[in-house]
Image (tube, rainbow, N blue to C red; front, top):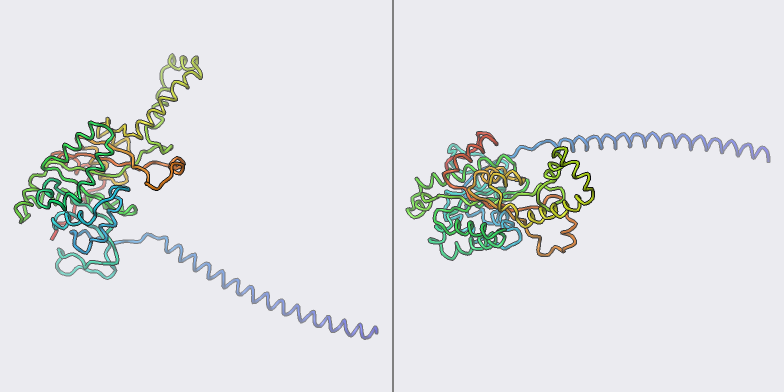
Amino acid sequence: QVAVRAHGEEHLNDDSEEFDDELDDDDDDDDDELDDDDDELDDEEEEEEFDDEPVNVELDFRNVVAQDRIGVASLLRRYLDYDALDATAMFELFLDQPRVGTVVRTVAEGDEKGDDEDMPLPYNADEGPVALAVPLSIQGKKRRLGDVASRALNPIRRYIRAHAPTVDTRTRFEEAWDKDGTFLVVSERLYNAPAELAAPLAQAIFDEVDWAAEDEKDKAKRAEFQAAKRFLIFGRCYEPDNDGDGGDSDDDDDDEDDEDDDASAKRKRKGKGKAKERAPKKKQRKADASAGAGADDSPMSLAERLAFPRAEDYVLTRHASWAFDFAVPPHPDADTASEARRKGPRERRVVALVLRKHVKAARRELEQLLGPNASVPHPA
């Protein structure tokens, strides 16, 4: 039995050695597979790093054409925030002035201009427009296009009128809207559109009005552009307040704390009583701002108080004869609790009237802010 046990132990030892050898081989194979996996991960990381590199996109500035209908409607879906806009009627106003108005789209891969540089690139149906800027003569369109113009423009008037913060601002807005020579600047673009679009788009608005005043073949249309006296800006802005409730920042409170020593001593003596006096004042400022306290601001101070995602809206507001802002109303389906929990700056709208005689100064400031490359070629 001992021999058998010994013989058996010898076989067990042999089997164990063979099993160990197999394990070693498996470990080597696993190590090779891990190395291959590491190489693949490194390749994927290199690809991801490559994907993070900036991508150059060529943009094409062109006149509005019929093929832009769907893309323009998509851009305008939030022009009145959550109120309805007749995008079909608005597009008809754009097509009524084919040489005045600019749409920007990305250039499709393989698109190249021919010998004639004035010829637009082929239309790329797969890429919608990324930006739009069209000046419209309000009363001129109503006289010539009647019901179509009313369906496009009346909702805009009603929306701004309903949200004007005071009787005075509402009156000034309506007076400007009803006057001959007032142009509504319809401007929208994607939120992630390049900031470099601001300068050429803003300059194109005024250049094309000037060109049409001289070169437009239709006599009635040419008269509209020649009569241009003021431009109504309807832009977007934000109240730079960490609480998200709008209103002034706490700088005023800090200024109060920096008063002379006598005033500081009085505050210390009053203690908590002073805090109770100041709290309602701060709340009142926030409530006023939420309701549109900017109505009494000068255009210059309003522009400095607000944050503008579009540089041209900031500059034009600074040069406006009057301006006011109001908070964007919540979505109709949003519940009160979710709105109360919302943090960050709240979106607002700014309405400003820029007289034509002040446009030159605004354009000069725009060039200083964004650079001299602020024009587009005369449309074909």
